[in-house]
Amino acid sequence: MARIQINFEGEMCDECGENPKAKCGKMLDGTQKFRAVCALCHRIRFLKPWLKYRGKECEMCEYTPMFSRSLDVHHRDGDKTNNDPDNLMTLCATCHREMEAIISECDGNYGQAESLFKKFMKALIS
Image 1 (cartoon, rainbow, N blue to C red):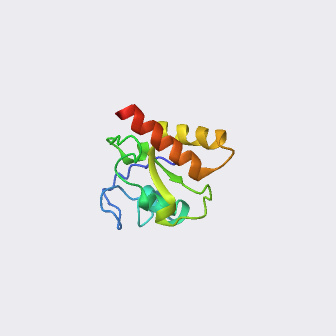
Image 2 (cartoon, one colour):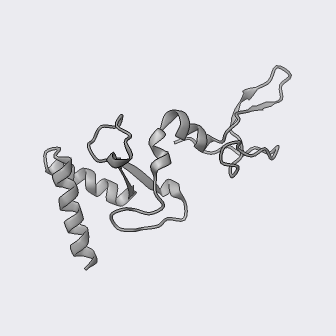
């Protein structure tokens, strides 16, 4: 993932208003050129549309990170082009790795893997 570049001019993103606008080259006179949006909003809009569905905590272990980028969006059916909200699940990096390992053990059966992982997490937390 691209790092958010610091905009020293102080212009904030037109979309979220929270992050500085992303740099995008130079003007003909040599001054810095900026996008209308920050790097994160650009990724959400053009590169990774599923990021807008990312929740604030892991749906498996309920971990709530300080920064949302610590969370992943898992495609429940394995199809990365299916960005239907019902197909997406917010997971921390650890749970995402575990989920992918269980999917592999279940020969790619995503539904069975999710069910097994939920049972494992329930037993672990109890």
